[in-house]
Amino acid sequence: MFIPLGTDRSLRRTPVVTRTLIVLLIVAYGLQLAAGGTDSGEAVRHFILARGTGLWTFVTYAFLHADGGLGDILHIVGNIVILWVFGPSVEDRFGRVGFSVFYVVGAVAAGVLHTVLQPNPVIGASGAISAVTGAYLVLFPLTRIRTLIILVIVGVYMVPSWFFIGLAIAKDLIGLGVGAGNVAVGAHLGGYAFGGGLSLILLGSGLLKREQYDLFNLARHQKRKQDFRAASRVSQRKINRVMQDNARRASRGDSEGGLSVESKHAAEARAAVSSAVSDGRLDDAAELYGDLLEKHPLSATLSRDAQYRLAAHLISSEKNAEAAGAFARFLDAYPTDRDAPEIRLLLGRIYAHALDDPRRAAPLFKAAAAQLADDDHRAAAAAEHEAALSRLKETA
Image (cartoon, rainbow, N blue to C red; front, top):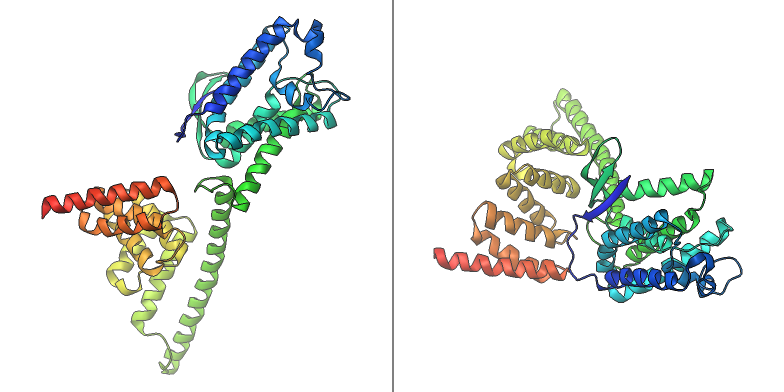
């Protein structure tokens, strides 16, 4: 058993809609019990989704739950817990109005697929909540879920969201194939498909602002990585051909038009660094890059992706001075790159906090504050700029 307790993602706004939905689920459950419940309450039956019922039931069914015993109580409690954990982050990205509409339409989409796949009537918020978790999977695939695991072992562990939600989807797919009894797996799958699909469409169209680690951008980064590796292989073959041509010219005593010995060595060293980055041997790449800087400083700028990956590895390895140099070279070579504003903010922070160099940090913060698209990041850069200026005045 996997019980989600929370996530490691911070929120920018209070999840008003999520809390309101939870209250509505509890109130609706109390009203249906007062009306006689789902077994004998005639009024309640008009709000249960089944083939041939009114269109309103595609919404109302998502606010009702079975009320026959402990298992049914655990069902509504489970739905509330999942909504409490995953709803706030999705609401944070969609906005309150957008999330309200999304939740209702998600319930409808889940109900439609249920009526197609399963003939039995359905009630419960699971379909709409599956839409929320489907959206969460696309928007925050690398966040971690604090999870109470009760299996052979019992304890609270941090589980990647892609694993937690992917496991739930796999369980419903298996249930659809082998039969899931009274579990509305069709509604669950309809919710996942709607939430995940709509989120991808919104991200792809630009209607929803992308974040660095959403599924859309992760896919783009993966494609860029593959393109870089392919380009690196092509570049290496070209370098090899030039070196072979130079060797043939040298053997004939003809050096005209060829690379100088110094240029050849620089090209070989740079190619070795690029190859190590492409193969994922980043520690080796960092060491080779240090040799390249020492022996051939004028040739120590790599391709865009290789320079970025190497600089990021250096900072993750807490080699702050080396990372600063690598990021500075990146900005010198690619000043208008799409990630340049974020890198200016990052490099400014390295100078200001790790290297205690506010003189170099201040202009980077100023440029980042003028160029960043994200409001929070822009405000952070402006605040860092003011702090760097204050430090400069203190030391003047």
